[in-house]
Length: 192
Ligand code: AMP
Image 1 (cartoon, rainbow, N blue to C red):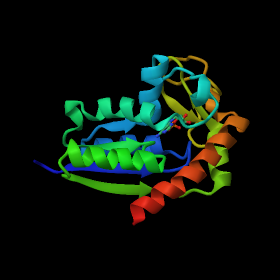
Image 2 (cartoon, protein in one colour; image 1 turned 30 degrees about the vertical axis):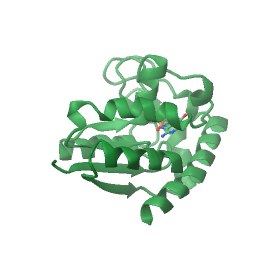
Image 3 (cartoon, rainbow, N blue to C red; image 1 turned 90 degrees about the horizontal axis):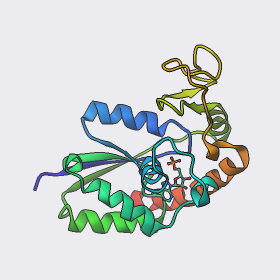
């Protein structure tokens, strides 16, 4: 069995992990699999939908739900050579579920590289404050780093830009707390 190349991106919310994931995917010709996107599509009907419930509140969803949805995606034929994982694993239990799967489904033939993007929390808050997306065509912007030509309007389709519901300050703080708590566990596990 050929080796499956797995890249795991670990970074704070809104730090550009999705952008880097897409670039890496293009460069390596592997699919970019974002758990946030997979969950939004599977549970809320579309990548651009604004979730409510635990996800809208910035809390992590339960491990079994996340893994059930992600596993279905990873078992698609385009992931057989490898994939870029963006947003998973985020808990120790998710690391274990993923490990068990690579052992059983991939017969241990996975080459896993973890890439950790480290950013200061002030920078993370600024990036999240500037984050916008076009609800019509899906293009991403950041008003501080890559703003649209006309403020708050999409360059491509002229739709008014929106903010992700989970980027408002109180929800963001919850996501950052969840990130800090869970990431240390994930990084410690992988560094061993
Ligand atoms: P993201 O787009 O990666 O920032 O994820 C958006 C939201 O999806 C998170 O705030 C969580 O509610 C949920 N989510 C994404 N990935 C996971 C995961 N691995 N485990 C639990 N919840 C997740």
